[in-house]
Length: 160
Image (tube, rainbow, N blue to C red; front, top):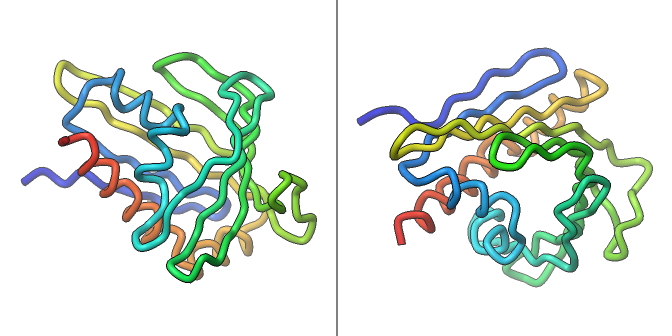
């Protein structure tokens, strides 16, 4: 079976590549429509709950990860660049439930790129941090494992 999850870590960036046996339209929609994002974004048993999303340049996705004991961790994504069905870029960070960034928490710059062939779509997610220590802290808290779990959720959703 072909390996479908790859990653590479440099001093301030992690690049994650995942191939899905699905159309570009379905995969693009899964990353850009909050009603679909909420079905896969969080690693189980956590769930993603969107409060608001405007998928436009300078628009925002405000959501929380809710744990099995109803604990909530809020995050945002400010979309900075969108080229439909090719890529989007944005700033991601932690915030309160109203979307106010938490200043002591770092943000990261994301680029999510979509490449398709007839029956497959490969998603390449690049996550850049200002400091090497920040990337290390994210990796130490299980970022890679959590993101892979979410992508596994997406793969299962796309098969339905």
